[in-house]
Image (tube, rainbow, N blue to C red):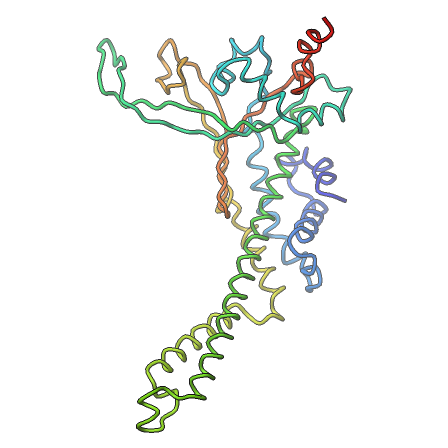
Amino acid sequence: MGLLGWLRRSTPKLGTDGLSEALVREATDYVVRMCDPRIALLGRYRERLAPPMICALQFVQQQHGLLEQPVLASPDAWPGTPLLRAIFASPDDMLRVFNQCSDLVEWLNRNPANDEAVVTLGMALREQKTLGMAMQGDVMQRDVVQTTLSFSEHRARIFSDSPATLWRSVARRIVDELAFIALSRFEAEQTSRKELEEDLALLRARLRTFERRGTGIDHLAAGSSVHASVEGRKLLHQLEDNERRLAQMGASSDLLELRLNMLTETLLQPEKYVHIDKHTVCVDSMNRVVEEDLPDGNPISYVTVKVDRTPPLERVLVAIRIPRAIVQPVGLRLDDAAKLLG
């Protein structure tokens, strides 16, 4: 059973009834298949991964509720919805983003019975600091530090038919991300091992060359071996350092154990790699952060996601509802069609 299957079946229990043994087992097998299926050859791999897998799933539980109830994203709703006004410059800007999203169009085509798509919208957020004027009590102050929020790179990524199924998809992506981080660590370790082995082979080849031809005057005067030369000693130190580092990595035969340990460490500390936070701020019509009690301030809420991997990831997420009726893919706009027919 795929991850979506076990999330669909068990996610309602997350945050209420705890984690079932079946969920932990299925999640463990899924992550192992993603990272390295050969880990399943190790004895008692499920038992060894069960505690870290529980930690990871509990971390997923804690994220439930971070996303606000999805807001209706339509041109009519834009003027009266502070969040939409903050992240889209205008209703036309919002429609342009939706109409250019091929994934959204495909999802709507695959689900003709749905009148709307419930979506996570990911964006880049820039906080710009400037000096301006602001009221502090009854006095106008100059050179006040102001923060302006700017949202860009809008991408609709996860699509669903309801907030509940949207959460399940988000939960699945978090587990996917942890597996991806572990896999990235595998790759980095393998790359380091390969580089050390190649460097070790080059160093040994250089030593053999020195041993065959000697080391210049030192060899001519005393007939000493390469071990007595300065260059030879440097090479030997490098060889010893490389061999020590390779030994610390373990032999190739221990590779699966090493990867199991890396996967364990990643699942035990999900908060070390994935940082998810909810923010609520008040902004004015210019997207400047203002105090809550100011009349022109409106509260908006969004989630920031930061992932420590290569390359690092930092995005803002909000949940929205996109009506089918407002999505007209580029090249199929009704007003353009009407002009052609006229």
